[in-house]
Image 1: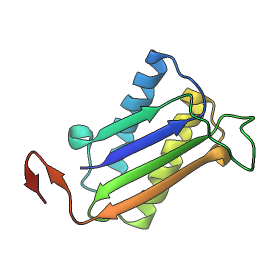
Image 2: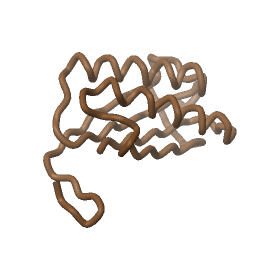
Image 3: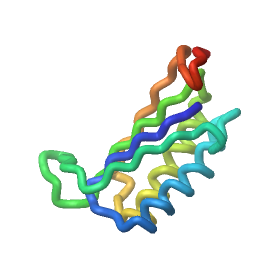
Image 4: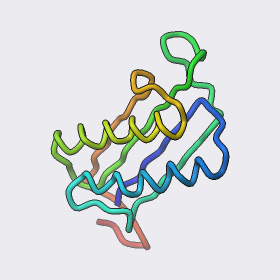
Length: 114
């Protein structure tokens, strides 16, 4: 039950948004036991993101929330892939993209608490 929340400084066309979503859906499988089956994605574009005190270049911040844990090497692989996706689809340089991971042991879905 992962959730990827992406905020982008740039405005994206609907087909680019769909492409980012689809690529994130494939990338989540880099985390053991995770797949697009229960992945939820939020993409916010045209956000006012300031990095190093300015907003003069494409910038992104992503939060990957995961039920349970994931090994560090898997998180490193997913971080690299998210940066690759946002560079190719939204022109965000990897050095202007933060990826944050949150792990939790309590997650609700369909009236049920895991």
